[in-house]
Image (cartoon, rainbow, N blue to C red; front, side, top):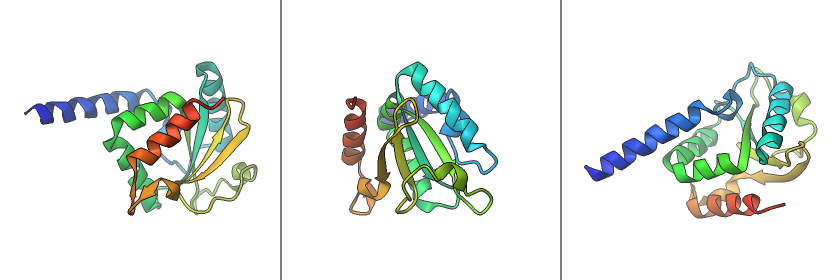
Length: 154
């Protein structure tokens, strides 16, 4: 019973946190304006003293869904991620490849791909999410190391 209550509370906290996030932080959307979302993410990052984590992918991307589930299952990591970064999900698909927005970034090696910027939008890092894998699964340890590195990065 105790495990059920713990899981239930974690899901409730995760749902409440997701409800307060901007739409561009929660899902890929081909209809969104990446430039407008980027400007909003910069304003939010500057006002909350966070960096921006741009996650490029789409609903067609299996590994994007696996990463989302991994973070939903590891609510502590998800919370730390959102405390450290403003998450900006940028859609790439046949419906909208956001090529104009992505010309400023190094070419991704695969999807999902992450870019970190400072609160002004200056690119600091390009991250292939395959580096978070260990034995074919996303690794808590590797994700934690990534978050900790950037949380403490000036």
